[in-house]
Image (cartoon, rainbow, N blue to C red; front, side, top):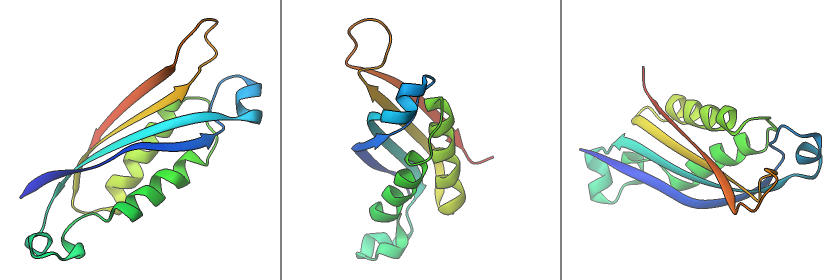
Length: 120
């Protein structure tokens, strides 16, 4: 049976951005991840081995967020790719990364990028 696992509102202080000051001082980011997966029957019998462990999913996102990049697209793609490679049951992944107070020369609460990837 297919279903979705989601982690929403993950917060990180990270060093993503085009400008040098963004990469040196960092910024606050929020990440939402939705993984379409195939649940095994064991998941419906209360066995963690039949699903994707939230803690393992979080650890992958945290690792990728710790690697500085200029573009959020790059980070989102890396997160989606590692999730698909790590979890055999993962079918599709949607990653939304939001940067708070982006340097756009005006008031903006956050700028977001959404990357969607499926198994090829």
